[in-house]
Length: 115
Image (cartoon, rainbow, N blue to C red):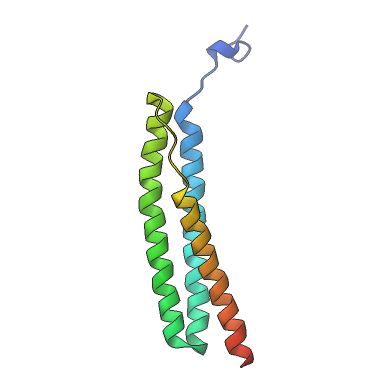
């Protein structure tokens, strides 16, 4: 009987699931920042001050997501190993805000292009 046949002998690292989720959210954050900056760049052609504002807001939100996500990762690891409560969903709410900024940039581009 091999180690894979006995579930008690299987190798399981509790922190791997948290790490994979963290890396996935980092990729989503970078993709959201990239998309919002492209959206802002396109809006700059139509309305420069709105485009620059959109780019600045996107960078601030992405930076806040990175900071909050790092703290969330530490809290989640602590919750798994020490038994504390899991952290709240502030990072996810900020991700929604970043996606709204991308959509606002696209909407402004369409409205500005037709005007």
